Length: 322
Image 1: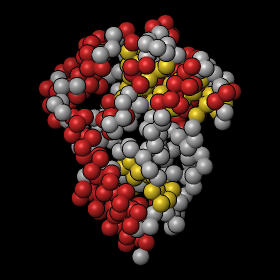
Image 2: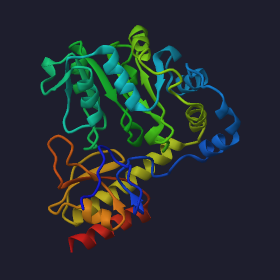
Image 3: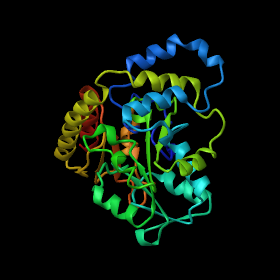
Image 4: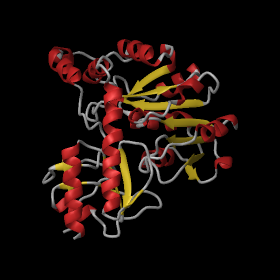
């Protein structure tokens, strides 16, 4: 019997003790988020604020951005869909392998993915990239922007690194759209909360119009507000990811897997023996990368977790390889 697979990580729970296929924060959801959700259960009976005003104010202060440069959505994927619906780009540049939602949404609205940046009108760039974890040099992004290309820069994993965001370039480039989300950084995947930043208010409003009414739920807005008050969350996260990523990369290399260099809270590696099925039968789910362009079943992506969980993964891979 063939094992069920999903387009993205997660989705499979039965028989899974450890899920390394989803790249959320190894620290889990902040306690202040959990407390806020439980303390505001009666608010769930109300319709949400369609403009997310309280959350917009809090996040704009955190990011040092004017509130009119922010819109929110039902996760980053919702905003990717809105961009494609609003702009209907015909030729879109991506760096493969990368997040498959870019191509899926582009094609839904009649566009195609091209391999040459000189042929495109819009580009989706992921920094750090998913699934490789590689960081893009800022000058490579700037070069596209200077050509007048609309660049959607997905920074959903930037907070796991010490690399700077491109937010400081928003004033210079009104054709720059920066995407981020609470999903990964605050382990809020089930709540769905993403945001898009741009200095061109008319462009941002045009994209916002393609969102469904009440797309950001009351629980998501409450959780987002609480998350922004968690002390030293990014510092603690980055310290943990840096330490555990180095451990995982070293151990996977010791087991003779080819580890791609990167900086995110996940690792792309290649094994001579495909590992997805044997690990899954042992209760561990990793990301099978065979549906990424240019990759096959020998590639796996694993999230960085806490030391005990990472050791379990390494020991299980060692057992499989023997």
